[in-house]
Amino acid sequence: MTACTLTAGLGLKPQHYGDALQCGAPGLWWEVHPENYLADGGPRLAWLEAIRARHPVALHGVSLSMAADAPPEAGHLARLATLAQRIEPVLISEHLAWSAWRGQYLPDLLPFPRTQASLQRIADNIARTQDVLQRAIAIENPTHYLHIDGHDWAETDFLAELVRRTGCTLLLDVNNVHVSANNLGFSALDYLDAFPLQAVAEIHLAGHHADPVHGPDLLIDSHDAPVAAAVWALYEHVTARTGPIPTLIERDDQLPAFNDLVAERDRAHGVLAAAQPAEAVCN
Image: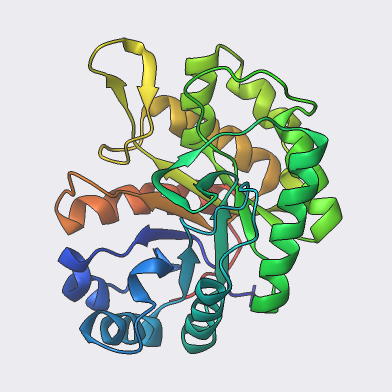
C-alpha cells in the first residue's frame, strides 16, 4: 500500500499556529480562507508558508460570489491565482451562493432560485475562475434557512449539471445537508443518496446550534460547536458508499483547546480509515 492520501484536516486559526506547526498527525492537512492571505507579505502569510512546508494546505473561498449577476472581480481572481501559485494548495473551493450584487457587498452566503439562467451564469463564473486558476475548483452545497420559489432544478441535479458543464468538482458539506433538511423539512438521507458523490473532492463537517427564538425548528450553521451525532451518522453513511474522501472539521467560533480539535479530527480520520483500512496516509 504505497499510495499517499489526505485524510482529515482542520481549519487553520491564528490562535493555533504554534500548535499546528508542531502537529504531526498522519494524513493531517489544513484549510484557510484565502481572503485572509492575499497580501504580498506579512506575518500571517509567513506562517501559512511555514505550515505549507510541513503539511498540505487547501484554500476555501468565501467571496467569489459565483451566483451573482456579474463575473468574479478580476483583481480578486488575480490575487487568488498568485496565492495559489505561492502555496500550491491541494484543493481550492468556493460556495454555491452569492454575496455581491450590482456593487453591493453583503457579509453572508445568500441563496438563489435554481433556474436555467442561474445555471448558465454560475457555470460561466466557474469556468472563468478555473481558466484564471488553471485548475478545477470544488463547489460547496449551501445551507438553507427558508423556502425559495422558482426552482427549475433539484439542488443535487443542479450541482451535477455544473460538474458536467465545467469539469468542476464538489465539496459536500454534511452539516449543511443536516441543517437544511431540518429547516426545510426534507430527508437528509434522500438528499445524500441523490448527491453526485462521484464528483466529491472534499467533505466538510461542522457544528450548529438551534436558533435562540425558534429553537430546534431552525438550526443555524454556526461552526461554533462540536460536530453533532446526527452529522457523524450522515458522514458514515456517505463514506460507506464513497470510501475515504479528504474531510475537514470546520470550527470558526468558540474555539476549544487545540487538543480538543485534534481529537475531533482524529475521529474523522478513524472513519476514513474504516472506510478503506489499507490506504496509506501522508505524514
